[in-house]
Image 1 (cartoon, helix red, strand yellow):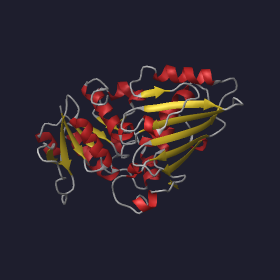
Image 2 (cartoon, one colour; image 1 turned 45 degrees about the vertical axis):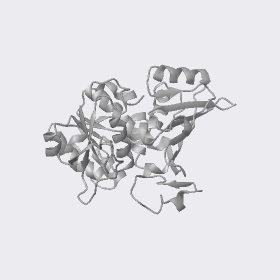
Image 3 (cartoon, helix red, strand yellow; image 1 turned 90 degrees about the vertical axis):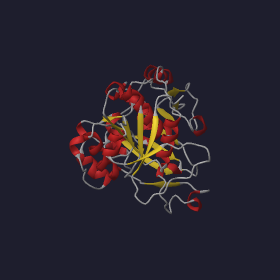
Image 4 (cartoon, helix red, strand yellow; image 1 turned 180 degrees about the vertical axis):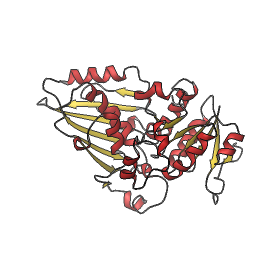
Length: 333
């Protein structure tokens, strides 16, 4: 199969190109969407991926099977309709098509959606929840990194009715700097990030509606705080919730085991054991651990992922495998 990557110069796109290069059934193609860009350096004697123009015509002429959009959401909203009309499968790593309703997109992204008609046909690419819909889909919106970890941690508990909905869930989320993308900014420069730790997008992070949309929580019952770690990659989320009376650690353990025991990329820890960033960096795993307070009423869940892999490129490959009929773990384990 032939796969094109638009935005291969960014962190997620570069990670994706590397994963595709090691995939046993895929030939990757770089798709250049910046007219002024020059070819990236490559070691002597190493064959680089073929490069195409980032157009629907070039993708169709090269007989590509799927195109990944590792681009800003504005670019994805322009390119996705053209690629789909040309008969190509599309996996969009941006936030351009993640939200079901155009009014939500306008509120959280600050401008109207450019093609709201496509929101009805796109499949949200979280395989642990929507595997059957992803199989055979032609258009998949890859989830955001923060919502991937938060929804995998929360949804089984909420569906099982184990949490007290009267008490808001607090998600304290920390990300490595690559989550901000490769574009230079003062906020993510070395001297600002090194030996530092900061909050950003308080009460306005674009990933909040994704968590609400797929967990079933109301906005008033979910408080999300994003923070910037002085490390290149990885996300660690600590989620605080109140348990329903009579729910204990054994019930939480059963809930997670029932949800994820057969999932290839979600690893559940024993009660009281908590994951860290080193557990998941450079992997497509989401690790979930939890502990219950001594009084038995409060729950702390820790979810860890690599924001560039399970939070972006690895999950995109997982979705591609499902769409094209490969084993879900191909190129990822």
